[in-house]
Image (tube, rainbow, N blue to C red; front, side):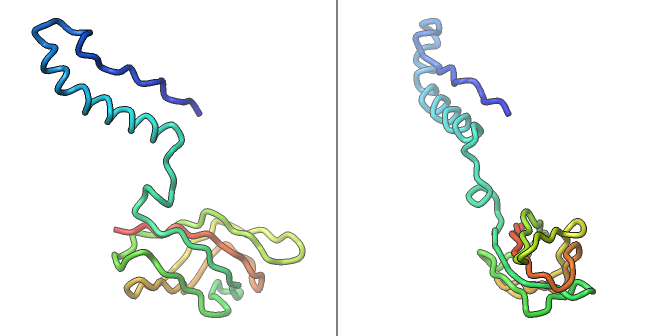
Length: 138
């Protein structure tokens, strides 16, 4: 992925005399803002710090129907309702490598800051997995 070009700063001396006072007043705000935007967009954006979301790891196994074999729940950062979830990593805890059998989709119930997983598709039965969930908040 490319990197954004360096910022071309605005200098009041680059403008005609009649505009220099106005450009001088605006240039600090414009230069500072664009410097921050370019720095952020050049790989300084993190999932955890920049989205209204909670990122959590949870370990459990499911039965043949996708129901967790033991209670599976996680907390979110506030009691806003969830827009949805996304699994961004799934790692089996088995001694031999076991992979998900399909796309992983989570059904859940939310009660305040507690989210209880009721069903998960895409995981093989009776194999313990650790999944990383992004819970998107409203």
